[in-house]
Image (cartoon, rainbow over all chains, first blue to last red; front, side):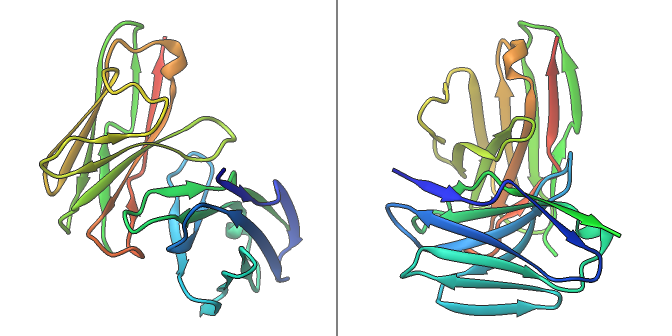
Length: 110
Length: 115
């Protein structure tokens, strides 16, 4: 079956670094998305990884290991506004029908 | 960046009525649009995939006669919830893709409450 696992909730301190992990088992793989979703709002695109390795975009970086079925989202210099849910989603085929993880709620404390 | 709008943002209706939700890509042509539903504290659930000019592809367990999807143009897709019931109350979100896998953009969502 299709399975995507993320921690339910994480807590971190403002200014610190946090890593949100995502493991997946899917019948196909064409890439992995990370989205940010604030409560009551639609998701916002953060990153898309197709090849193994680390991709950095400002304070956010995303890593992918296809052989291990593993990805992580790294957030640096945490700000209070980073408090949100972070969703991991796998693009199984080239038609962009995504399989979504349940999301990780990130709580930032002063 | 690309913008996707949804209308209405909130709707409250009586049980048994139908509700139409519009999803528009404002500055790009969307070859594919997706409709999702999200219940509180749960992840997104893909309901259907809509390609312009063809019938939508529904996910298993989603009633196509209840959730009517029309993708009449490259910038507009509509979802009609027919004979809505309280259990249909949810957050409905559309996303649109111009064809590249790293550019799937989400609309702001529509919160539907059925009384």
